[in-house]
Image 1 (tube, rainbow, N blue to C red):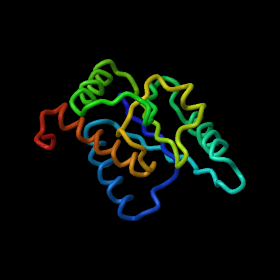
Image 2 (tube, rainbow, N blue to C red; image 1 turned 90 degrees about the vertical axis):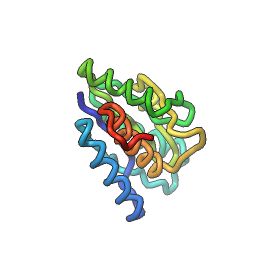
Image 3 (cartoon, rainbow, N blue to C red; image 1 turned 135 degrees about the horizontal axis):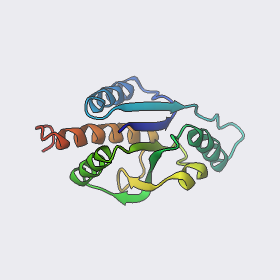
Length: 154
């Protein structure tokens, strides 16, 4: 099993970048983790929809063909930490590849939505895409600790 996370751009704020890197490093102790940062679309002269779709097309090109694609989307299904950990463990046991996709500032492009096998809500509200990446990284780490019965999860 391999876990991929396909995101738009790099975190701009140093503190947030450090927190993301910390949790991605922690998560990689439990799941073979690959993070793919796709170029952010310059928004000058383009509508939000055009930006979203151009970024989505670039993300779709980077999605592994054999992966279960999980689109991180506020309209997706909510999942508590324990069921999320069980689901990831099931994917590992079945030797499936899982790819999470976090859209950019304007959300997920249509190409990603079409390719997604599942939609997962990271919160009941809209998160900035950098914060969504941090939340996902922390939950991947938490899921690893739950799967191994370690004390981080309370």
